[in-house]
Length: 373
Image 1 (cartoon, rainbow, N blue to C red):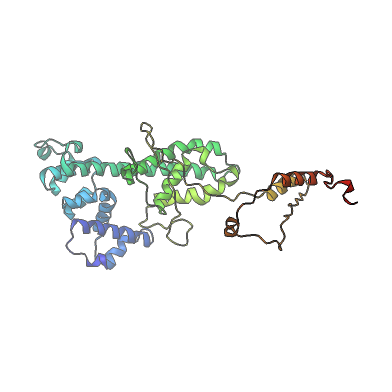
Image 2: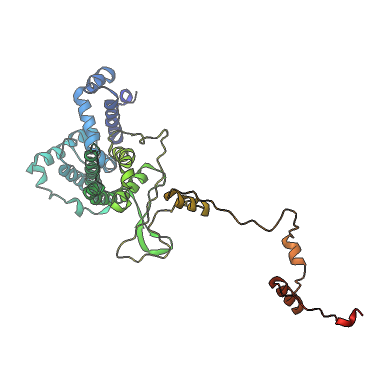
């Protein structure tokens, strides 16, 4: 219905049209989109190809092209340009306030009749917000391409190792850990803001991705893969690679519009705790912790530890706990009663008598022998 109802299109609607066509292409059997769009929407096959090219090739520049109000026809022409030519066209539009089809054609063909009159402007030399948006567009385009390429490289090494009967942890880690570190930093650069630490303003660090989200889990996975010491033990390695590493990397590099989180009944991604990172050249405040939240584990009792030690020697440990001298019939005073009674200190004679009684010393009678007489 959206494709049929579109009439006169704005720049934003042009991108939405290409996005809807790309989504339809995923739902339809391969090679049938153009025929379907011709029959159901009244489009020509050429128009469908052009609109899909606009979305695929120019979506990274969407924001600045929308702000520059580049028309749909110009977008169609620009969708066939090389990245360097697109950036040059954006710089031309920012400098002149408009961009026409003939301007794009002149840039693409390298014509000298229009471009020689105006010196080509390096996007990094364009001031103001337009110049900033132009170089941000370059960063997004090249940064995403590099990030996805590194994730694909890691996934290729893991996929190559999984069919083997014995996965050598050290060998696989050596192939992937540096790439994982680089990809983790690239994700930070592309998706995370920077801010001063709350209790130490001189420490500037990346803000964490929202917890319990898919991209936070991607960041945590890349951080974990960045060092062999944080990988699971050999017995758990294959399961970790199959159920966590490969599915998360596939989710992160998926080209579909809304990929489902791997292995989850709901759309909620597992929570991820990413350690706070401080620059190597910056002092770390006392309350900055570089380790994830620790998990409390129950401490085994003495009986359990003794039983485990005895089991190692094929024996059975029998432990008799000392019986308390206190019986149920004893009247145990409360704290209030104990505090209410004044403390009674024994006399010296009582102490001496108690010691002699416990040691078995017979005390002499203090009665004179002739008293009975």
